[in-house]
Length: 66
Image (cartoon, rainbow, N blue to C red; front, top):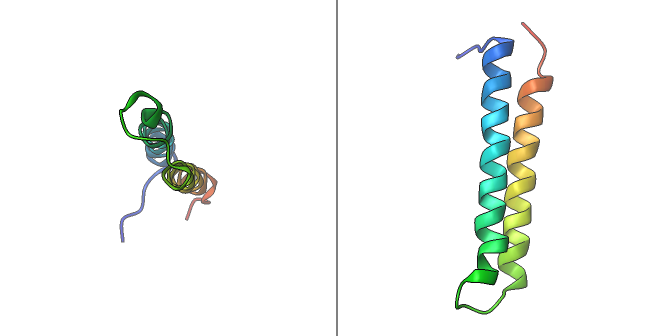
């Protein structure tokens, strides 16, 4: 099993939270600049993906040291 140190987990968590913002931007705000009509389901999927990524990042940081 891969065991990460606190600093490594913090760095990965930060990167995952940045990835969450990029995913939300692409899936939610990207619909406004495209030629396709706005879809509430697509926006909801973007928000759900953002919440999953942020939750994963927070869970990585809160994990206690072995």
